Image 1 (cartoon, rainbow over the protein chains, first blue to last red):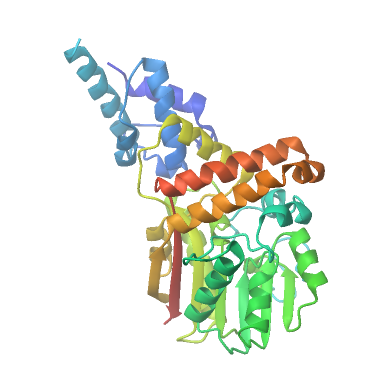
Image 2: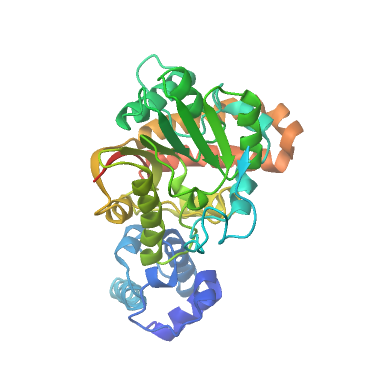
Length: 85
Length: 303
C-alpha cells in the first residue's frame, strides 16, 4: 500500500514547483494549485513507476487533479498487479 | 526605435505601477529570439516568419506564410486600416505585409527581442514602427483599428503558474487589447495551445520537458479554454480553427532547412545550440501530429 506521505516525499524530491510552493501537502492538494504543469505531472508519474515498480496508464494522468487521486491510481495499480500474480 | 526602459512600474505614460507581469521575463525571451538573426535566416522562410504557416496544395513555405498572414489580417479586418498593432512582431513580416500589401497606414510592432527590433529597424519599412516594449507597458490611450498577435501569447503566462493566475495573465492581455480597440474592433490571435491527447510516452515527455526547459524557458502554452474564459465580457469569439497538421508540416520544413544548412548554423551558434534546435524542430513536428499540442487561429471582436 503506497501512502500519501510516500508520494508527497517523492513529489518534494522531484518537483521544483512543489519545493517552491512551500505549502503543506495533503490528499486534497490540487497539482494545478501548486503550479505543477500537466507535463511535470506526466513526468512525475514516470518517477512514481520507477520508485514503486508500477506500470501506470499514461492516459490517466489527465484525470488526476489531487494528490489523493494520484495515491488512489497508484494503489489501484498495486492491487491489479497483485491480483494477476 | 522607441523603448520603454527603466524599472517596471512608474513611467511618464503610466504614473501608477502596472499590474505584475506574469509572462516570461525579457531575458527568457531574449535567450531564444536573440540567438542570432543570421541563424534564423538559415531555416525560416525568406521573410523570417517564425510561426505556423497555412498550407494549400502547391504552396511553398513562403507562399504558405503569406497565406497565414493574409488570413489573420483579413480576420482582423485590418485591410486598409489606419493603425494596426502587432504584439510580438518578430522580424517584421506582418508589419511589411500590412503596409505593403494591405494598405495599412501605420503598423506598430512590439517585441522584447533586441535583435529582432534592430533587424526590423534596418528594414526601414515605410509606415512601420518597431518598439522594444512589453505590451504591458504599451500606452493604454493608444487606439488601433485592429490588433494582431502571432505566436506571442504562449509567453504571456510563465511556466508553473497556478491556473487562476494564468487566466489572470491572459485576461490582462485581453483587457489591454479591448482598451486599444473600439467596440467592433478585432483581435486576431494565433497561438500554440495544449492538445487533448494526454497519452504521452516517456520519450515524448522527455522531449517536451527539454523544449520547455532549454529551448523556451519560462513559458507555458495556454489551453484554448483558458483563452476563452480570459476573454469573457471583453471579446466575443468570431471564428476559431485548430491546425496542428499545418504546424507539423511547417516545423518539418524548418527542420529540413536547418539540417541542410547545418555547417553554416554551427559556424554561427555552435554545435550544441544547433543540435538543440534540430532536436526541438524534429520533435515538435511529431508532438503536433500526435495532438499533444494544437495550433489555434482565433479571431475576437471587441464588445
